[in-house]
Image (cartoon, one colour):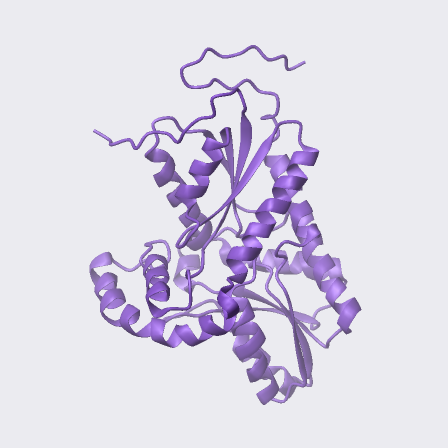
Length: 358
């Protein structure tokens, strides 16, 4: 028999909302080694992230990687989490608040927005419970990963399913599993890069860098690689770029094995030898800035580019909580919740109310 954990408190009044859940991977609670170890343990312990058999992988993870890797990562996190601030957590909170405000002003039905993290706080479970306690009876889950990938979007689906499976009364649910070619998203990316060039001057090359995954995942059918290239082409077309003025690469490789190529660092190192001494890097797959963008691109890869003979490397920040991003997500939510507004919702233990749909 399943063990249900009950349902979060339901408002005593008749307030009913559409709930929107934004989900990202997460970040350590602090730059302390123990917090980094806890975060990495959750991330790398997810079978979606590392597909090796558990009997093989878990001893390696807990016996070798977690005792050593957090020590090497602590310095990077200390630099990024300066003054105790977490860019990913804070920017996610700003995006949540601004999106809720935008949706409340545009939608006929009240909408509540929450943000949850897969491997850190605030958890997906807490965010879901908050939405239900605020009256959400219909739920739209928006993984902040525009290009579908089993490692990311698949992990969100798994976690939301686990949380809802423990509730006695669960809301109706829809998922935005992919928006790699969404017109609003492409326009937000175009506008952010164009604004950066207008303010700082255009460089000789645009490199679009994506988080890498093992090539074997795509060999088995994951569409991530194709989705990244499709987004890149749409964005290059929107910016009016020609072949040779832009390229695609993949970053954040972990461990051995074959990962999606070419690698971002290697591409940047090769550009000066080809006569390209100024470059712009944008990371369209990262909705919010994090260690992989603020440390890996802005610090480490910039240094590699300059050592190779480059003279200027610009990083265009992620869309974060910019108005163009908020508006793009608001349009996405509106499209995926179409048909929900004005529908009758039965409160647990109550008779359905008659609502005119005409």
